[in-house]
Length: 150
Length: 395
Image (tube, rainbow over the protein chains, first blue to last red):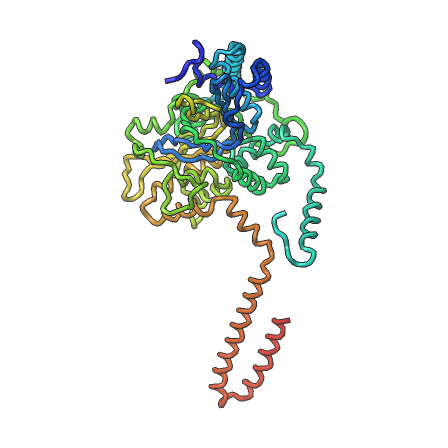
């Protein structure tokens, strides 16, 4: 079951889209959010940290899991007016992870920037969809139907 | 600087050697990470896979620092990896979810979904190009173009059935599914043990040096008599993007936190050897970070061999070689250490050789003494020659 933070977005969808957003975009939005807060409303409950996600793959033959290796990722957790926000994203950008956690909390508490953050999430979703569609369009000419040659 | 000699001038010589290398590579500082990522994606993917660490920019920085030496770049990446805390485990990455960028099914002409060549030069002759243009002088307008262009309507962007599922549906594939879902073996925290669980083998091969795996596979198919045994067929070779999901710590639900690129392969063999079920095929699996088809293919074939012959000496040996000899960091590290001073150990070998020679001399003396009565003159002549040889070696 997913947790809905908005009629059109679950919290997990929001995290997924914000983790795919450009760092500069979310950092700028987070600066706006932080600028609108009272001094004691923001608490960094888990300082931004870069480490690894241990990647497991489920191979499709025996459906067994194995460890592929490590993926560099950054994470952070904040409380915004006592509403907890969390972020994790691939890469070593701790600044972006902290900003993403702030945006997560801002949407959860339905703060003044929530709509703008959701609009950014929509924009990322649209961009990803368009990017994949364009990629497929470029790939289709490479589809081949081989004759029997062996 | 890692090795500080304690002999006279050792440290300053090591520093001077490093400075010499640095000064000769000053121009490399102008090469940006972005330029490397654009120009050399294949080597960056290989370094990440063998380093066991996904981060393109860090791998590119390692490549630049290593002057293009893959083994050194992998070493740098592994060292960096060892400094990073583990934040969490991903939920299992499901290869069936791959957004395809390339997919070929050599086993079947018209599988479910497309034969998608993607970015490749596999099907064209290549020679070195200097400057722009085709060095073979060909012109695309001279080619016979297919009349029937394939459009996106025929092949929409959708998940496609992997070929082994087709074989399984026909009842032609050995069922190796394991309902117990065992915890994967963690090679970063645990030593290699034999027999190794399959998850350890797959993990070791995903980290293995690409060339080592390819060589291992090639050694298997080219027998000692030089004859090729090509009894393995590839079901799928796929390259694309996969989402990485973790458990959200606040909601407990899966959440995607990014994407990686990966290559996967499944290979199949007809079980037609004595004692096998000739009505079925067995399959092996390969998976590599980034775009590295050679590694994924070799891995799939070695996984298949290790499973197929698991109950006999050939399988045990295959597993042993996979687990103990394919890690590039270990192999290259051991090789490189041979360049370090070995004066003491080698001197002890010389001492032992001299002792053996002296012992041999004594034996000879005893034998000669026994013959002394018969050959006194010859015995007297050999002893000075032996002493001279010993002096020569000591000198």
